[in-house]
Length: 224
Image (cartoon, rainbow, N blue to C red; front, side, top):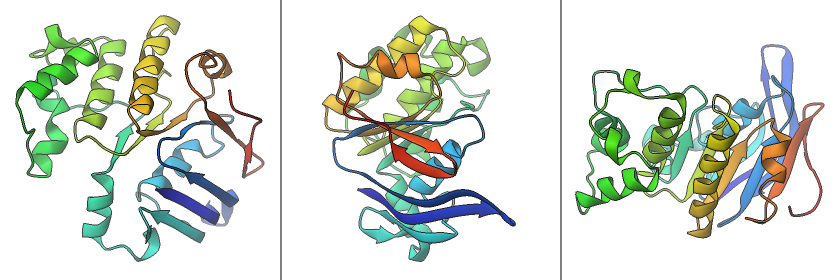
């Protein structure tokens, strides 16, 4: 689905990531870890075509990202749901309108309007349906961001530090939702520096841990 082959990325004369080879296979579950500033966000951006590798080849659904047109990238992104670290919303829109925004922008709609209600119920936000983003707590915003990422029924979910601004109980709740998505056949990649969060998944899902160290990505051991 998404594959990086001997990929490097740098800013100016500085190399942030070097000689990375990894593959996100259908239905797989990965954690991406490493210290702050190691390049986790940069790697995720390459995985959905926001950044183009300085060297090497990134393949998005069998297409070389370097040679994809804007329309090709847009079509690929419809199959990729991204939970951004900063959880930005449009404050003048309701939670429901923010969650459905990817559909609105792409000119699509849900087959059944009740699907949006089902999605909000799944993330525990039915009662906040008409609330504006400033009225939401940190945990509610994170769950809304996850709902927005999956409203288009993507094949791949990329989550960049989705639990960075919430407490432990909410972190576990968000992780449970991501595990449920994986059990539905979705490919999941979660960037996190929280090793306790990774360890807590042992009884829930088989996952690979990818660790960024010294500009490289290494497999960090066997399945969790």
